[in-house]
Length: 282
Ligand code: SAH
Image 1 (spheres, rainbow, N blue to C red):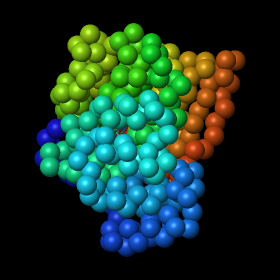
Image 2: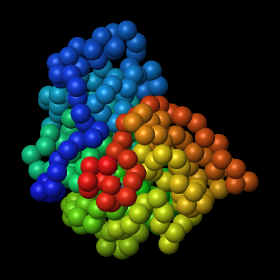
Image 3: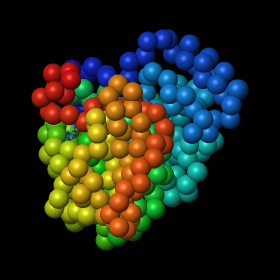
């Protein structure tokens, strides 16, 4: 996709220290503790934990999705075969701004005060939702941005399922559709089982509800009620909740309609907000 000419301010990627310092810090952390997802601290820069993935962050020697996936497997971030296959198939390079290092494990600006999440965050969310992304299921991606995760969802739920992206910046919706058209799930876009819409994601997308899986790619001050309402009994939502410091919440809707909510990890995402607030820099 091409980089929009509007601001490229990076809310979720604002390092206050040099990269070399972070590399050293991460190396130390990896020596102190095995790099499991749950044990990793949340440093300032990304939308999540850094797990001693210095080489992945530098992107050195990573030339394709397959190598990126192998790196994430090596560091214990990806354990699911299915997620490895999907992230190996949907090429991240088709979704990042032209000239960006596509396979570096870091969020990147996509313009409009938005970012594409880091590969390890995409992997984490796909794994948390995997059971609810089986063929034939319905998935909603709120704040779909580049469309990367929506495309991954579509590959998982297949032509008998439904993958729906919702994004409130019309230019991002257009470019995400262009990105998806270059991937293996382009036919699903044509058939209509994959769609991306302009709208306020806080309201969900009732047309294709209820959803087995809901992913929210921006941090909400609290879980929006319409998203809870559009979650199927037995369904799961993954949503960052909070303001500056946020928790990635896993929300399971039980068969009786009650909710079980747990915190997976600490994260840092851009806010789920109004279009106006986002464009003026929050
Ligand atoms: N998951 C996407 C984008 C993450 S950035 C990716 O990895 O490519 C979060 C996205 O949420 C941004 O694109 C932003 O424009 C969008 N967003 C924020 N608030 C929103 C809202 N109320 N409704 C719809 N989209 C929203």
